[in-house]
Length: 344
Image 1: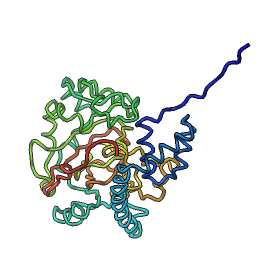
Image 2: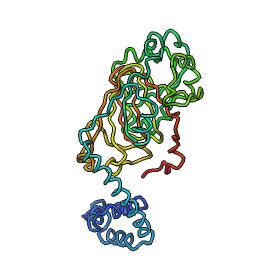
Image 3: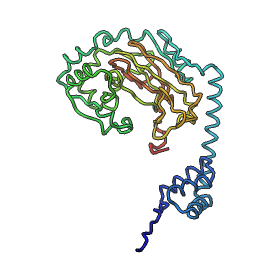
Image 4: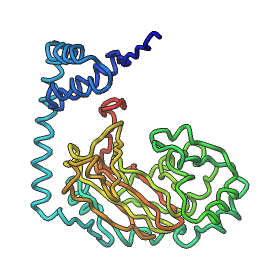
């Protein structure tokens, strides 16, 4: 009887593997270790070593290495600031609360220094603080069609893929979902739904005052409306502008990380990271060890200043309504020269 011969499947080294080789060489992984991983994945050892050696000889890789060295220098500079922040007491950080902070003090102490602050006592003239609740929303706007993000639980990248989660629903039906859902992150009305909802719920802005100490009065840019149940989460990310979070209904827990910690936060796409600020996985993200995380709870009637570049994770502790603002009195265009949104 003829003996059956079996052959080990040989993996071809395609461009995806070559990109992986180049990235790991730039990260400082030893060439032998890279060749070993290729061999473990079915690439013949001689071919694996040949691919790594070809990468090392590549003038393209040498050019990218010079660029990587410049990026490493920037990380070093940021690391200096991160170290100084920690030496200055930021290892156990607390976001300060300041009552009725004047516009001039806010500008000099926080806007110019890129430091977060919670401002109290400045929303007392907003009728929304006493008027807005589920009954009011349902009775006055129940028939209006609005846009909401749905199906977030089934998509780990729901924020990056927010456009795919948009759905139309009557506002009254959405209000009842919030009333009966308990804690949920599966549906949420966010700033990404603003194009339709600003018109559908335009009378809501009659209940909102102005903040001339801090914001330019622009009827076309009077804020973004966020509304959802307890349990909604906006994962760790940074914004491309300075932002105000004005809390109207319910509480939100916000965790913040300074921009100087960029090299430790594992920014993987656009302005997002897969690090969970509630409990960073230090096996997967070891550089997060020791990174100070500012933790605060934003109460109704309070404003949180989120400076541009600060990483933040937001979790609703109750049924929550938040107004977000970017129309500051001072220059706030930090997005025009932002790098492309491709993988980093």
